[in-house]
Image (cartoon, rainbow, N blue to C red; front, side):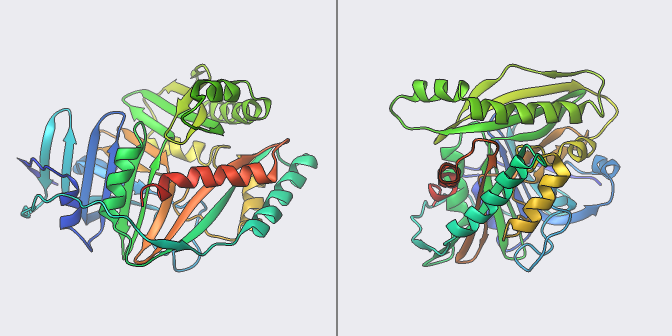
Length: 381
């Protein structure tokens, strides 16, 4: 497939997203590499990764579980998609790549809106039941960890403004991967701090990101140090590091776990360890297949934890906490996990947050942690 390329300098890159309103499109901003990719108008549904060579970039998103139940997430995910139009802004400049005929993009600024909404979720009793089921399985020795999640339903006075939300997500979340995927009247968007797998040539990287503490402006340094030395969080982090390392050893003979470090975000600290490998044989999806879900998203042991979550979580995860991202025609790219996220459908927003439950976890504390994580979305409103 031949794509033409032209220079396109936009004062506000969201003009490109806005131009294709109502059509299938994806927004992907890697704040670490300062690379923005917006794709619009589905061109092809790829059957194999080998087909990627014909297209500039491929978007991939899968559902957390094998299938999605119900109408909310219907036909969202489990596809490799090429688009007809791409806007790219990175170290090489700004450009517009198109398959057939370019469209004229009006360069207008995003207006930041203050959304007025009400929360229609009363789920603490359901959370208690889920927490009890998980802790009972831990005490019985069936699992060492499971990641419980919540779905919070917000209803706005008017339709939620995707462009305003995406702009605030970019502004508020340096170091994260800002994403938006629109299909059939629904948009899944968020700001993920976590790489499931990154491929740059033969260099493979995954994040072990587990262990969390809320952050306030005062005593930041002391809060971070407390997390680094907190027994419960360090144990939770160790479970994730070991599992990711063991999973990566299935595809690479040499795997290295770096030092545990603090990752500082707007509202909290995480414990993070980078796990790396060298590999020239396997694709990004091969790596995603052995890693997803890590114990930071599902649990350990994986199969038992996932059965527990399917039985006791009352909502559909859909694309939440699942691999999504972009790769180029060489197969290099990033799949993040779709956390700090929400699904928008008109006046309705379904925001998601989760936390790892291990021996020693407290029900109220973990529920409060989900509220802190939900602030990523709420502050974007």
